[in-house]
Length: 130
Image (cartoon, rainbow, N blue to C red; front, top):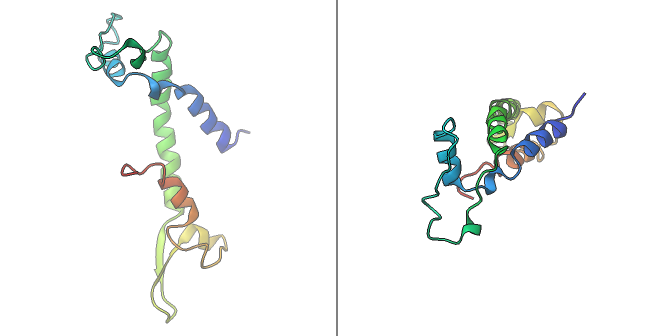
């Protein structure tokens, strides 16, 4: 049985290096996928050629596999977010927001404070303002 790390490692392997490719070439490559023609880069045309990493012949298959991984990755993140939801409780000391998933597993009040370490670790890399 594979672990979560095994599944994520496979996804990372399929997408490795794709984010280093020239975004303009990727965009045009997807638009002109069936033409199989040479694509000029309009972004890096005035820059030395080493600055523009062209996709290789096999990158199309890897791009497709990486895109196919996204729904499974989104479903996994959504499942974690459903488990680690905030709830507010008050025992006379004022309202406290805790994580339902952590509290249900017996975490201490401090460890179950929302956002819990799981949510912080998950959402940190997803922030667009970082």
